[in-house]
Length: 169
Image (cartoon, rainbow, N blue to C red; front, side):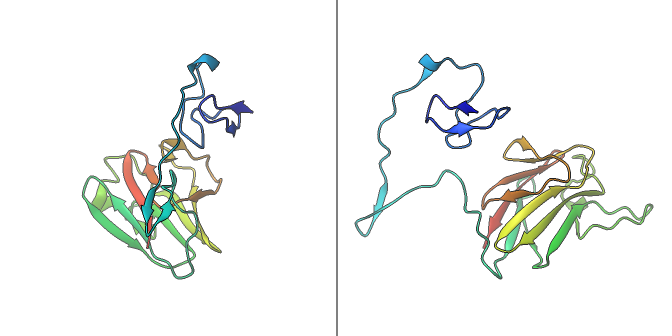
């Protein structure tokens, strides 16, 4: 375990940034600890409202999922099916993913024909890299192939070099 010098959170070996506060875990001396002031919460109706650093992982039953592609400023609503395969269509090889990302620059950005899948699992949304050639990344961290990863509302998902954000409605 690596203990973050910024917030004292325990992190697994090999993690580059603290999972709690995002502070770099490598190359820092214990004397680099910063003195932090108490976080001031905003108030609504006299009640403190915290500002979470990470999005919610709970996808309510019947909740919609939207992928926002930054480059084209396009929102794509994912169907409420159990699994949606993301990739690029190829008529020559008869490959047709559930969501064809070709209109959003899939070929130029290194998206595989069958790149990744988004799966609904009870009240969570999972991302699975399907063994893509150029990798799948969530918030800059590479996703291990064939290993489900829970997505949070607002996560950045990069397929090859194609960047999108996932939002829960």
